[in-house]
Image (cartoon, rainbow, N blue to C red):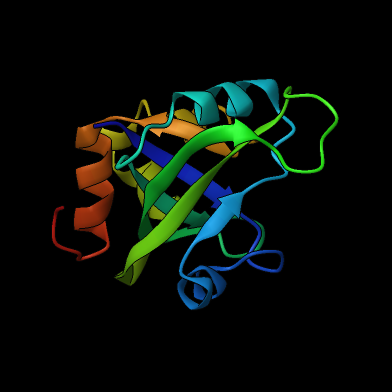
Length: 138
């Protein structure tokens, strides 16, 4: 199993909408590195749902429910999507500041590549962020 961090502007697609929808097509990714990460995502992988923009905090855990396929409406298969479903919200959102302050997260990809909307994280980083959010490990 792999672990990921997915960023979304809360004004565009917030956690609450994912919960209401029950499943989401993770589309609109136009960064080549993020697109390549989407291609690496496998069914059952876990992802942290991060609100970017003004909030800058991890708010929940979701799961890859369908592996990558060409983004609907695109003329070529250059851009891909995955589908995710919500698993559970964080009892306490984990802010960007608290992640930066945690030594165990010093190599976290999203802290080094701040514009990357789909980033891999290690199991240890995943569990550390879950602990910061007072959530039980999965």
